[in-house]
View 1 (cartoon, rainbow, N blue to C red):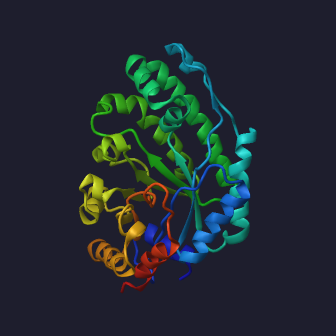
View 2 (cartoon, rainbow, N blue to C red):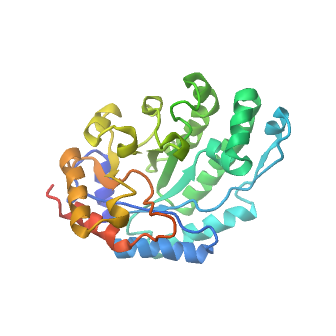
Length: 319
């Protein structure tokens, strides 16, 4: 099997010829499109991983001033004809030109609610979400519509699917009713794009914010669209084995601690952690990855040999 066939087998819940693996981390937003593409290609080439995830280390063209509740109804999100779309467009084109036929390529997107948090501040967003939920919902819908157009643009450029970060389902942030009004429908709107296009993939990454200790109310996301699911094992206390059953025996991505051996461990420790994940998860419908982006301490860079060691451990595990 090649890398594409291997991952497609996992998505069908089958055993590939060897277990695929994929890991990623953020890049400075100050990099040019050319530099960003080069970093992604370097990661892919030097680690031998089986999938390419293009990071969203850029901002959406989201504008508006919020001084009263009704202002949420008038925010603006630039479309694929905006100058801001040119950077991800160039990043995608450069990556696909170089390695597009070698592995499936996914575009990362944070959800509409997170986009609002980036643009207007989390405290401001949460205040108005509790104070004027109907107005905020109208604003989030504007963002979701814009993101839907961007995702269609990404797919038209040739990416194979979406790596979607579903957030704002942390314990204590929203009641279930509030979440179902303000967050869920707009997550589902974006996820519906790949679901409705033949051959396109949704990866559902469920993520909590630091102030909530990265925890998530996973039952809320249990039926969210996703061809393969990823959650933080260490932060949510849901093992790979139990998580597979919890999410209806869907294919699973993940397992490794994103802040431990992958950033500071020895080759032996990385190998043992990776293979421990594989012994628990099995080799059918499973791709080795991490709880979230590989996250070294501030000022420390990710060393690619560690990621390569984890990938090699997956590739060498008997299927």
